[in-house]
Length: 319
Image 1 (tube, rainbow, N blue to C red):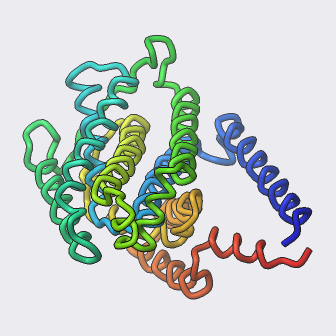
Image 2: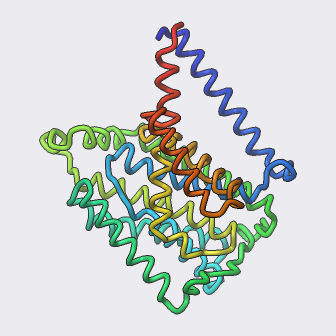
């Protein structure tokens, strides 16, 4: 590919991003076309999927317990806002910090194993979090933590307005994804990629592999927690479904569909899965079947995920 064609591809990419930005900014003004609350959920799940992609796609660490960070942060945010009376910015920080702490604990236990053993450890730990959310007296048990107040951001912006809430979610979600991009392209990210590709060689060069894995695990958990915290405020609910292992499976599906080794690819997978669940909700259990069929078609047709396949196709295009 020549410099001219590469420049054209970059320009096309920037134009596409600009168009997407305009569309997202316009969502609250056209509620008849797109329901803003649906887009807020999509943004939360997109950030969650990208955070998981950071761990699996770039770190090569398979976790089956990421719902613990997403849902655990939702409960912490809900408790801080409802029982503690914290403002929304404090509740969001509490949820994110709680997820980061939980991620550090999970990572410290799990990173000494690899492959399916690591995945099973994270699943077992996540099930403990699910049991705690079910049994503790202040979490609402099967009903979840309801009527979480949105409050006023910095005491000024009333988040009870869906428009104000939407722009906050948009700002934080985009900021989180840009942070993931910065992490991947930083010296830290380059070392993580080296560890994924050849861990023994990274050790021989003197890199503290376990420390890098732990930091990556914690960062992924914190960003997942931010997504869960925002979802709790959007729906004013922290539900058991947010910590259920089904959600851990869904985020793996989102990352695989969008493209594991791309920064924003998992967001595409999240948009596809959330849209299917939303628009096919009337069909009940058939949603799972349709999602499974879409997953099979995408895996067979797009081996590198949707975004990865598009990138490869663009790279192979003649000038």
